[in-house]
Image (cartoon, rainbow, N blue to C red; front, side, top):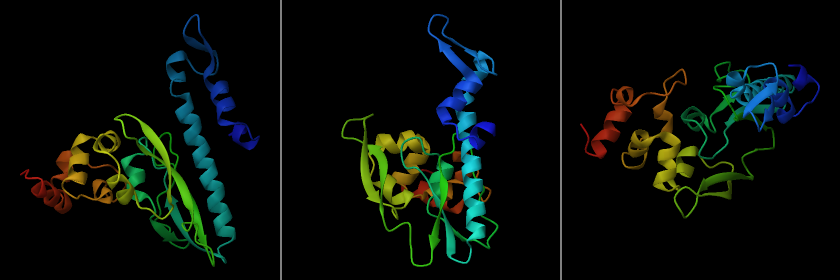
Length: 213
């Protein structure tokens, strides 16, 4: 919290937590964590930073609710985006609706809430996304419309990219069975396993489309 309060960068806070890397011993030293724990230091720092950033955004929104109409879940779009964030991307809530999911939803959270105000829609712009390139395993940055849904964006990606993002089983249901990403999580934003998906109406329909019982 002190690092965030004092305006320290993520990199400097990570260094304070895990220490400096010694090329000779191949271990971290000088931090507050042991070498084994240090491997998770960056995830912890980034998660904590995300929490504070979104808490500040939330307080700002509530103080300006006379001009802010809605909060919008805005996810980073690349091959490291979680199913949870894909499923919530572009969902909207009014400021009076207290049922919106609090961030962070997981370690290494990168999603944020953006706000639609009277006379300004933040989705009427372009934004960067990192999708699959021509060669398998390669990534390319592209500019897309900010209003592009996760389903529409992933549909345009090569199969290997979707499998890397969702897992092979979910990717098959998504690409071949037409299962939407929002159907891959439960009401509490927990990803459904393949066996759990098979028990849902949407999951069964997707399985039937690809010829699986």
